[in-house]
Length: 71
Image (cartoon, rainbow, N blue to C red; front, side, top):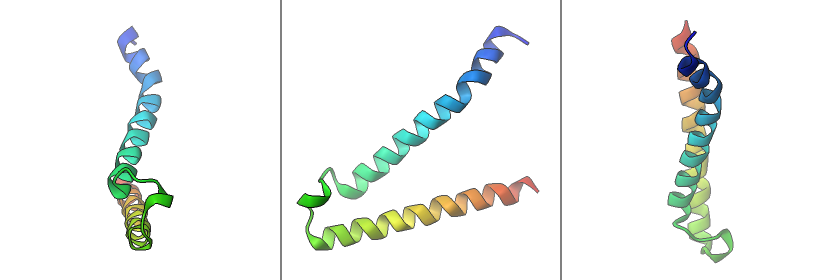
């Protein structure tokens, strides 16, 4: 095995986690529009909760689709 392949093999899980964390931060920033939860109006909080719930369901659906794709 080449050294470059070994390095990629060891770094791939960490890189994936960092990318996922960055995507999650971006989604949260977009949903909250940069405001903290205390600064939001009750209507904005409700919208953010609904959007986060939808995002969570979309992630679950994507995971299920990946699992089903393995078969």
